[in-house]
Image (cartoon, rainbow, N blue to C red):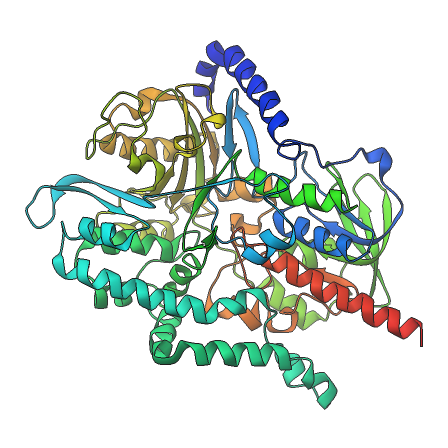
Length: 600
């Protein structure tokens, strides 16, 4: 909800709106794709398509672009008024545009950027440097005077910052990065290829078994590529992050900062076994050929989805908003299309769902289409989420005590980084996790602040800024039967703001308005089961050949022609696009088999 603080925006609302409308028109003249609408009127909706895609999240749009290019007639139906799913830009507070859910880009696969010509279709990204900023409430380090930690793209600059706290850590940093880069390089091909299918491997016929041969060869190549880092990779997959980081480093600000990547979006602690994989997942990205780089998207994360949609529509796909699906139609174990909530039936030979596995198979697909034991597996998938996203409009740039602004409202390097608050020590993160386990929101929340207007001023009126707060830990269900009503939403947000105020006095007074999305709000707004941003937890039991389950791990289902193309499929969450591409490849194989069979 938008707090009453948003009323303060009304005085400047007219100016903000005029400014943004003017900027919008100017930007259109520079790039014909940047702001073009990719959606169509419901009156243009046909009764029959080759493929219907449920949900216009980024993965569904990727599927649409690939399938349309292959010659199929594709239709995308989206329940909301705007495309993008969780990769969306919305003007919640007049004059201010927010990346309302996802907020930074790195994981989008380079092959997809190239294949879909996304830069041609409007995608522009500002690479960040430095990448991470951790201010301290109290000076520390080797001489007791260090006030903050900055991590740069340049390893040597990062080592110099780390040396404030530990010379040993500064030296080890270079080796730590080399090890991660080696591991990422080895396993990266797994992100761009379908996983090994255990049902195929265990099939009774050699013909069925051979279907998994390409995936097996890719897996074996990746494992061989690990070489001497095989043990380190196994440890990352199974050990607590604290165990891994303790081997490398001794300074807590560094360990706590790195630990945030191991728990982001997950209801786990750095002390939870297997948390190391989440850390690895978040360093597997690449932007403009720079490995591990993260960036701010011009126009917000909705511009990523818009560029993909522009490509799909340019190739001939149709996209319809405010078209929620009531049911996936199936008969005799074969998909027949979808039924919209307004009663419109759309016939299709294949249906791809960008929704979560729970929504796809338990809510939209009528009972009786899947075996009961498979339904039981699906009911037991873990969607636990700790995330509350708070989008804030401010009238001036935060001024951190650790690194005061040189001039009022002038952007400094650390404003462009992900700003980690309450991250002086890993125990703070663990204690926040324990609070959530008791059904309470964290007393000292883990806060990641990103200020996209530090690089893209078009997201707010002149002099104003947007602060995106990704916070943990907040349980879906509060203790003692309490609900996430307006009172509890605002109490939690006030807790977050009080902590920010300690690091950056004056922050609360600068706030014009805020948009608070707790786990139930994320579920309601974006159809994310449990509020989980990854469409299901990224634990070992729900990864690779077991995502979302072992029998559903290769995008297809027992219902012929029904595919899962969202983040609930391999390789998982984040604005990656790979699940959408791989589901499209599997769908094309289905059409090829169908064509060959019908023409024998």
